[in-house]
Length: 494
Image 1: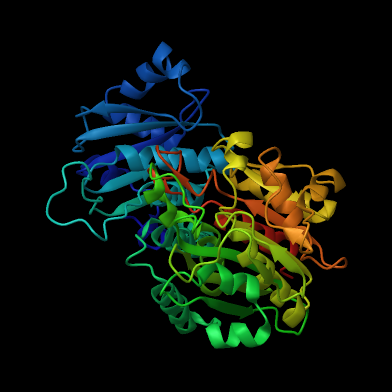
Image 2: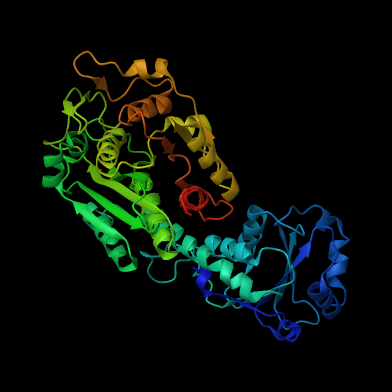
């Protein structure tokens, strides 16, 4: 695993480039016109760069793509990695280039030269994010998972001090993403509710105020919906509150609320066994909230943000909630539980109400791996966004687009809400298969006060992938940490 903080930025030194072992990378504009560093490498390699940039192979490359030239003449390196970039790349293009370097860098040292205006700090972030590997439970030499690169990464640039300064907040962001990925990748016998809470409590060391509410506290607060989800499991249900007060005043915080179901069997409404092992990721929303809070603390963000996560395990047993049971929420509304596998909305309902009741937030955003229906609607390219506030929704969508994390706004309306009518309680927890993701969002909206701008992000399709993505190997992606960090920087810091 490569951390941005372990990547160095230095002045351009072509003698070091010529003598570098391992691999050397050069950033070349897509028009093929070489900058001074690339021209020097072109001379050293007997015009190999010029021949490449005049070839059909180069024309077929997209921005961010990489071509490898093995054992280049004139260099001590074992390979020259040629990365195609626009002269002024976007954030996404620069990070894609970094990801390409991560895949091609090997296990030795990597030296990157050229591209004076090519966002070296974002290339470094892309390299670090794509270099992530979760190896906590690997023993010995696992043939299918090679060890992470061990050599240093050095960016040679005309402005190393500026690149190093800009990379500081990105290093914090990278650590937040990694923290989320680690949490989502952990198996449920390791990441219990106790262990999850302990990992969050440890973030007091970086400046967060962390409070853990135990089951007795939750009962006193009247969180009957949340407690009903966990009553079939021996693992204690908890709510963890993480507060970052970086604004230096008492302005109302942004509230982030995450679903933290550490394992979801479906409860009495038991899931099909095929693929159930992936339900270790059903705490993905809580993982994102934790990663964002870690990022804010590490980069000393000038914003007030409170993160709340409901930690629970949904298991079948003699004490589990049954279909047909009625539970009372902290708000006071009653819910007829039709399907115990629609448990995430019960978790969020109580934690969201508590967040508003206690903190009177300026806005509230919740994240959850909430429905399979959102995957049917949007696949794995976009998270579903639901909101009661156009300005907040637009800001979240803009932040997601800027960070290259897909999100798509979904509709809401009274017709969907009507599906939640119950014969014996104030509402049901499900309303049929059609429009299931929207009906789930309508359920959550019933627990949002009218004066609170709110956004719900259903990340069921984006939190964990079965194949590699641009910036992550298969497994946990950390989707949402970059989006929310940018949203906070753009909208809530000042």
